[in-house]
Every structure is written in C-alpha cells, then in structure tokens.
Image: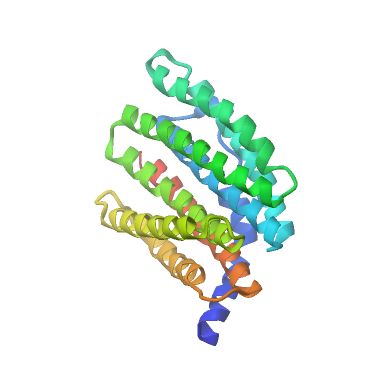
Length: 269
C-alpha cells in the first residue's frame, strides 16, 4: 500500500469516536414510539451487534486496540439487551406471534452468547464465541425478515438491506481477526470473501433504489469512500500490527456510515 493511501486510512480513525457516540451507539427510542420501520432497524442492528462483539473478542485476544475493543463490546452487549427488550415487547401483539416466538428463541441464545463473549478472552473461548455468534446471527436475521414481511413495503426492504450492510461490515472484520487468530483459516477466508461479495452486491442495489433522497445519495457517496478504505484494509497482505489496527478502525467507520444510512431509510417511511 502506498504511503498516501496508508495515511488516509489512518486519518479515518478521527471519525470513529464521535461517530460511534452520535450514531451507531445512540440511545434507542422508547418502545411506546417504536414504528414497524424502526423495529426492522433495531432487529437488523441485532445482527450487526452479534458480529461486532465477536470481532471485539478476537481483537482483545490478539491485543489489537484492546481498550477500545473492551469499550465497544460492553456497549454492544448493553445495546443488544435494550433492543431485545424492545423487540420482545413490540412483537407481543397477536398479529406478530411468529416474530414473538423468534425473539423468545433469541433471548435464550443470547444468554449463553453474552456469557461467552463478555468473558476474559482465550483460545478455547474464541471457539465457543465462533459457534454461538452464528446461532445468534441466524435467529436475529430470521426476526428481521419476519418484521420486513409484516411491513411489506419497498422502504421496509431498504431498511433491512441497508441494515444488513452494518452486519456484513462487522462480519468481514470478525473473519479477518478470526483468521489472524488461526481459527479455521480456510473456512474463515472463504466466509470473508462471501461477505465481501454480498456487501458489494447489496451496495449496488441501494445505490440504484428509486426511493433515494438527496441526503441518502450523499451518505451513499460517503459510505462508498469508507468502504474503499475498509476494503483496502481487509485486503492487505502480510501480518502486522498496523494492518490489524487499520481493520479495527475502518470497520467502525463503515459501520457508522451504514448505520446513518439505515436511519435515513427508516425516516423515508
């Protein structure tokens, strides 16, 4: 990577702290004001949090931005708790019985995953986290799909699609750090490549959406820039602490951009 490009990636770190507080970790709305689109947004964010926590666990194990990883993991676990409570209340209505059952299942899975991912990191714990995070992700995705089906509008689809990009950003970073930790290297490499292909395909769909407002288009352009930084970071060859730090930083920046985009799509409804 040339010196100028490397400096751009490192400079992107300045976006992360304020952005994380203002957007990605902003306080969720009270349940009394939860719309169906906001429910899809929060449901989709649960997918992202499942991957982000696994990423942060692996970062701690590798000694990469440990203080930040601990802070993000703790905040993510708290956010998952809050949103799960919101979604269980929201889906308690009779016409949402299928989704309600999914969130009861998610609550049971979350208890085990929360205990594992918030424990002191070690190699055996990483294997447990690698298994449980996939179960939590699959169930959180199922709930999001069910809510989108109940909404049944193009905007609901865009909220789900944009929200899934948040998850894919953290999933790619997670697999990068899993690979660095030596966890099923061939499988994790393939999974990272698939997540990258899924992200690119979905991004093209979002850019082509006729519902995009001028503000959405502006944020898509910003997200595209952050994606280029992140894509270059996860594509770096060789093992170095600088590479690891670039991935940790740029994964949070693309997450913030996609979280803002998802909020904007929610407001279009």
